[in-house]
Amino acid sequence: MTQPLWQKTGVQIDAKIMKFLAGDDVLLDREFFLHDIAASKAHVEGLANIGVVSADESAALKRELDVLAGDFRSGAFVLDERYEDGHSAIEARLTERLGDAGRRVHTGRSRNDQILVATRLWLKEQLATLQVHCRAIAQVCLDRAAQPALPLPGYTHLQRAVVSSTAMWFAGFAEGFIDSAWRAQQTTTWIDANPLGTAAGYGVNLKLDRGHTTQALGFSRMQVSPIYAQLSRGKFEMAVLEAIGSALLDLRRMAWDLSLFTTAEFDFVKLPPEYTTGSSIMPNKRNPDVVELLRASYASVAAARTEIEQLLSLPSGYQRDLQFSKGSLFHGCRHGLGALELVPDLLARLQWNEAAMRAAIEPAMYATDVAIEQAAAGVPFRDAYRAAAETAASAGQGRTPESSLAARVSPGAGNDLRLDELRGRLGRLDT
Image: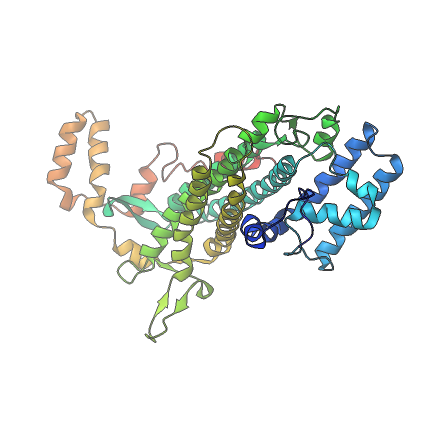
């Protein structure tokens, strides 16, 4: 390992302790490394603006940072156990190539605000990906909701309740994922604050050009208080995981439906073959493993959020405990976004079994229609309710699923899905 940035004369570093301190940090920093380089370029420009580095040094440092980014992308430079972390690797590379200019690059910043800004840029990227996936899922749901509606039993308490439709099912999840896309956008607005220049949490005795770094890195505002910059670490990460988790809660319920609907007992849905697997012992089986793992994915994101929350039992100021938040953050985001990415194709290609769904609609499922009709004719609803309950077995006489849905004219129901309104909400999201 290269010499730590904090190494001082007369301090002996124990290899076992150093290994524990470093942990997987340098490997996890690969995820944030390009963002760290981008922030370092902006920091160099800010230092040049206040005369800490010369124009020539600034140009050389930015040139070498670009070279390092290219080498990292191509694999010519590998971030590995030679370095304590990504920050150390950047400074070591610049010092190796540029000598004293490389040694000046850390002026006015700490590894604390360095990881804060790199992570913040990465979090914005994750939220942009979340919005893309939620919009794609919502669009597929809207497209399929616009297709001719097929009768589908509606359930409460997992018991047959009322007549529903495939269009209502898709419209429900469309609105859910539109909301999740909005939440991703709103969370982005909330976390879009630049912490670079807050150093170790108390500022520095230099008039840093924080306005420049804020603009150069594409932040909408500066995170003003150095103390709050430290207090926000973990808090902002949890907000991103909560936004991903919100989408995965809808996915979990969707996956539950599909898990039930694909059973022989329901037989409502046939999945694309790529989304099923075979049994290692039972030749007859095709299992909805992908759907089951989609259903389970929320747990990974919730666990990541919980781990970070547990790390935050801390006083103000930076504490090394927060290093452990990187792994949970990375794995939670990667797993959650990876699950959502699979959903649009699955929904676009699943096939409904109309005959099985129609056969599952029993006469009693029209009883609510009967009660509402009587109430609309002037019978007190509770009296109409009791009368319909007594004759529920014959409630379907002269009725069809299509007639039930056609009469369902309340906003959002079977005959008034308001798909144009949902499309409008989706279209008003920032691209």
